[in-house]
Image (cartoon, rainbow, N blue to C red; front, side):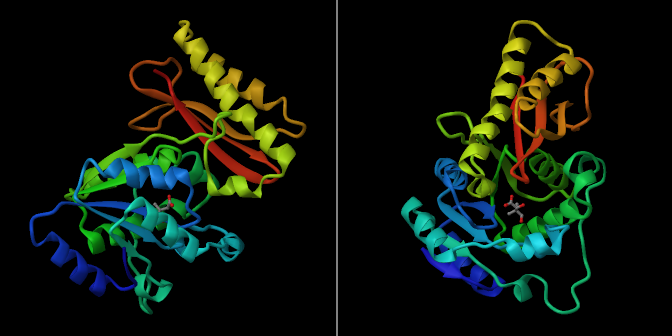
Length: 280
Ligand code: PAF
């Protein structure tokens, strides 16, 4: 695996890899890699010849500077994992490479970015859209993949790519779960053993709601209540939201019709855990 730190070097490496017409696939990450990220790289295998991964902890998407400072990654370990997965190129720029002095441009997506994470973390999605636009410009991938776990982020990227007519195909990567149902996340490392057990109530609630939907329940309020009831079994439940939305617009619905999904965020041990499930 070739590791590069500047856009210039990245373009040089990719232009030689592309010279025989190879297509390029891209997985952007902020490091702290786990099997969820690696599954995205694995999924790309069948869609392109050259796989590029980026590791960049993007300061502009943290609405709290302390969270940014506390975000620790082990790049050497992440590199080993990518190497084992057979990724061809790692782009790991420094902050000054992405945001040199004088930087003053940002990309903002309006409606999709407003509710949920957008409302709770002001500026977050503008930071995400801006850095992903820059990364797309640097890598120029034919295809890029984003995990469904951050579903609002995925919807935002899909909107941005469609609106800006960016020549990249976006793939959705399925959520990877531990055997007991917990959605993989780098945040899980911050859970106590009891917290991890409590966290299971989130996915259990989602699966119970989906079972109820499959038995014919179409009321969003009823399905949301099933999720919340499960989470309320935690000793100190904090639910940021548990809402059935239309998958394309992320607007809350009253009745499930067409492609809908339940989005949920609950806090365990002070850690915000995001999860969601399609109602199919
Ligand atoms: O999902 C992430 O890890 C980040 O939001 C992303 C897409 C790499 C942008 O910094």
